Length: 93
Image 1 (cartoon, rainbow, N blue to C red):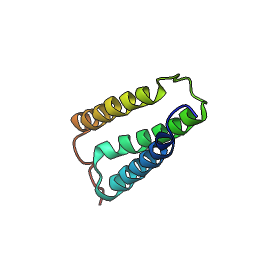
Image 2: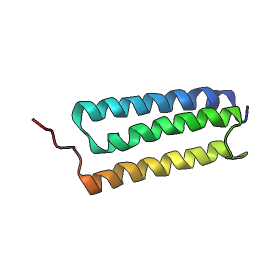
Image 3: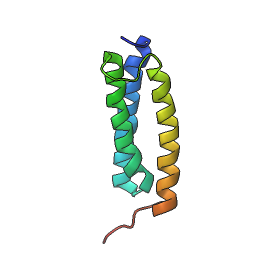
């Protein structure tokens, strides 16, 4: 294992929770950034699990790199998607 045990357990669980919550929210209310952040969080959950198993090329600083990717990626996806597409997806009737 390449990181402390709590990281190996909490990162995949929390990122999966966040990803599923975003996808459900996107379906429920149509918030644009949720369509982007949901899959992003699920992808990071898989990468975090692979990091724990030592199957990623992120190296010794893998958890720090994941933190950086999570922080910057979330800000870019939330702000960028809503700047480009607006806050809510139009509802079809």
